[in-house]
Image 1: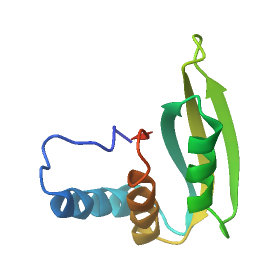
Image 2: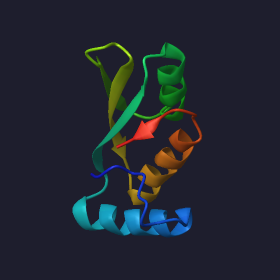
Image 3: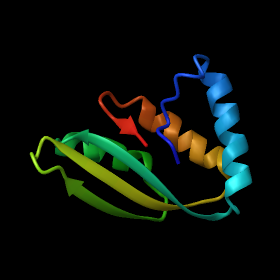
Image 4: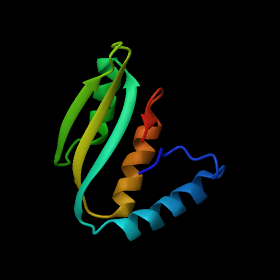
Length: 101
């Protein structure tokens, strides 16, 4: 999936409506969905992201950049539908300094 930050959708409501349509076209929910984030290499930021996934079944993998400044966080999570994916993205979006892919 393309970078979740999309300059063509200045209105977040329109963006999430469009995202929901794309998710429903391209995925067969319920299924495993891969969330990808990039954060500064700060364990507190990663912990904040993981709190969003509390009570969900997921697997986590991290990879630090070659300079050690950033960490990519990949979370493969079982989700029920597009609404749940969007809900997770909205919660992570409230965490400062997280780029969502």
